[in-house]
Amino acid sequence: MKPSESVQLKVRGINYHCRCWGREGAPKLFMLHGFQDVSASWQFTVDALEKDWHVIAPDWRGYGLTGWSGQDTYWFPDFIADLDAILDHFEPQLPARLVAHSMGASVAGLYAGAVGKRVSKLVSIEGFGGAPAIPEEAPRRYAKWLRQIAQGEEQRPYADFEDFALRMMAENPRLSAERAKFLVQHWGKEEADGTVVRRADPAHKVLRPTPARQDEALACWRAISAPVLMIEGANSRHVATQRAKPEEHQERLAAFQTLVDVVRIDNAGHNIHHDQPAALAQAIEPFLLAP
Image (cartoon, rainbow, N blue to C red; front, side):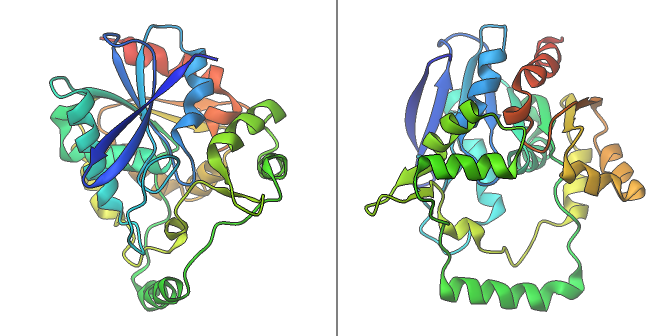
């Protein structure tokens, strides 16, 4: 495995952890993880990259080794502002190359549309977002949010790291035992009673009462000026759900007016960077290196 180092910085009042691979002075590449994930998940993809890169991958607020917000709900615009601060710290002069997965891809897509001059290339891995919010569900959504912040949330405990790894493999049959063992060491932390819980603020499990508006996301995607590469897993339930509504799927795809290609990776589910990291690296590197 390629060695990494940890860099700590203050971002909008929160102690942020960034995992970095490669040498200073090499072209910078920013990798953004998704929901309930951590920066170390990019290890397998970084190992498969052929070019000399300086990879920078933050743990989002409330995840991994980054501090918690201290609030009872995590608001999506905060991730966008955090990304802006991280790029200003590591790449203040040049537009950045972004490789982002799931929630991280949603953040990157909105950011690239809002501050286009700061992004030179965008690889969006399963970054179409969720189903559009239904206005009629607002009363139920607010009620659930109120219940959750009143009762509090907890991360599920596992008997030990092995139990955690077995659970992750059960949820994703494509995840090898070796990779699962590596991941849970970064995903989990041991409690005083010997159990292991995910390194994530339980407040992330609280429903956001004001979900992202699809029309606003489409407007941001249309404003992206950087070339975009979309990547999806051939066996992803997330993608299958999107494609089950062809008109909606096509509308989202068409919003990326600088879309270069859509690459489907075989034998991969939603977490392509866990399932087929070598194929993922082979797909993204030529795009990132193209003029």
